[in-house]
Image 1 (cartoon, rainbow, N blue to C red):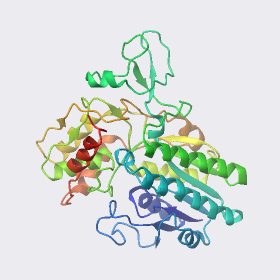
Image 2: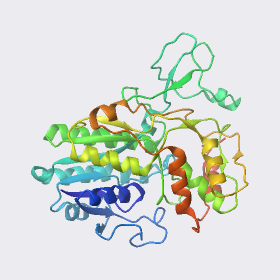
Image 3: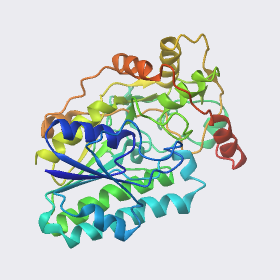
Image 4: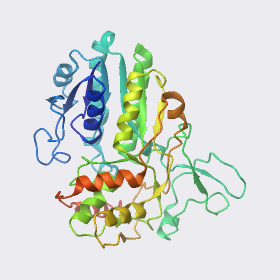
Length: 372
């Protein structure tokens, strides 16, 4: 099978390319090599030489048309990524993400008889808050709204029930109502709905995968809007304390990029998830402050995270995956524990330099009233 990966020179795309090449497939990547993600410019050194790289923007119809020639399947990863930045670069994010997806889909339809599968990357961010239960009543499957401004201003961090008492997080299933709280999250919701709707209408099998918090080697260390593990690593490599919002006890589901690539390969080559949206996570919650402390220890840095006590507009408290559907439909289960995955990340980090732009990014949020 010949697979086109849009955004294929990036962090997740390059790992999927490795997996597909190892499985005997051909891979073409279409990537605009954006400077925020690829500050060195040019073809990344980590991209396998067997990947055919075409440079171009997914909004460029001619570039997309060229990239689609002769391919059997399309993986759409190309996107402007970053929750905070999306809230003040609204037009750019929506243009790249929504219009880019539209161009890809229209060009796919021109050759739909030859396309066997569409795969699109969605995100856990579209859930908003994760799923909760009330420990006093036993009621589960709760989908609370964002915490009230007054509550956050009082530095009361946990999600509260109707009785004013804290709720307990539970695994978030695909059936939870979607409540995206950023432009990026809205864009990713649009991505999955566009691909699934078009795929169903035209008879092209499509799968949307909701990635939880992906980490691993090749993450851009100089991009202040990338994942927490890379941002914390960048700070520590520069001898600075990782900045942690709220009290640091908020939790996320951290999944190794190699597990992500494995799940994508299963969805591409099998038909069990066709027409469906699937969580891709570990099902294990990890606190943000624990991530910072784990990376600091691994790097041999005696630097404690700086818990700033501020909060960001739209931030959620807890969200981790219910991975049951991925196992049921694809036979997928995440195999790499967080501690082992972080150790591999730290080995990759040895000797690397990273430009720390976190303070500037934080100041941009504060200046716009998005962090307070």
